[in-house]
Amino acid sequence: MSTSWKKWFALSVLGVALHAVAQVNMRPEVAKFLQAAQEAIQAKQPDMALIKIQEARAAQQLTEPEKMFLERLSVVAAMNAQKFDVASSSLDYLLQSKELSSVDRSTLTETMVSVSQRNKDHAKVVQWARRYAQDGGKSQAVHIMKVQALALQGLHKDVLQEMQDAYKVSNYQPQESELRIYAFSQKQLKDEAAYARTLTQLVTRFPSKDYWSDLLNSMGRMPGISARVQLDVSRLMDATGTLEEAEDYLDSAQFAIKAGLPHEALRMLEQGQVAGLYKGASAVSYVKLKQQAQQRATEDDKSFKSLTAASDHGPMLVQLGDVLLSKGQWGDAAAAYQKALNKGGLKREAETRLHCAIALLKANQGEQAKTMLQSVTDDASVVQLASLWMSLVK
Image (tube, rainbow, N blue to C red; front, side):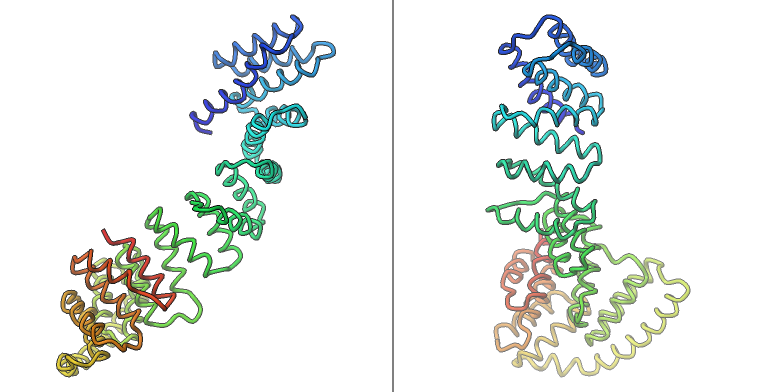
């Protein structure tokens, strides 16, 4: 628990208790112990405060106002002493009262959620968090504790329902911890598409190498994914620094070969070689793939002239752009793609726009790349890739 939370807690719960002092005529034999408990709390001696509170409890026939005041002090002292079972017991008593104001009840209920979390009583966290929401509580922190407790109990379908309900609130912005829990539950339920969507939110709003790695590896395993899309995922992995293992580079090279882009395969293989990743079986695979890519690259170079001559044929211009992009000739690739787009009538226009944007971004033409990415429509998987590239545009 953070210091700032402790400070807020003391002001809210103890503040209500102190406000009550002026309204309660406590018997001297009770008041002296509770006054001493207050002083101990303020002196940051919570264990001493609990001793004084226990002495007050020993008084005969405590009145209800005395008992309520005592239990409030007990919550504060117990929380500061990190005796959360004691705090929970006191809160249980307080929350039974029908005399609490709505504001007071909301504060105490929120405190009960936090105490239950500290006690690792996940069922109780959910119980009181739901009670809090039913009473109109709006704290996002309580919602986070609730979905976390559900996930810890393995109630992943409930996590999904709670998050879907949260999104119904206009302009709801989940915090990073919420999205992590949401993604975890989606993963446990094997909903790969939903998992990828949540990871997309994470990399867009809270970018980190780990999130990028999880997202792109997940996208690369989508059922029915084509070699072309797998290659585009590999390109994003390269751009985000998440190609790390020998297998990553070998797979990327294979995707490039399947997509008919052997020069890109050679570039990927070379990156892995420079990083010193190929050893043992991966070294053997590297040699085989390199030979295969070199052979196909030689064949492609022979037909390259026919592509450059096809300056008025849209699909051929796209092929030219693909080859130039695979060779790392970013500016020329962008020009070929743009010319093809101007011609119109392309079979996979969304992909062409994405690849043109990648070429523009690699050529340090960020604004033009952004405009091109914004123009990608119709194909859901390509639109998703475009949104991810957009997050990389500086």
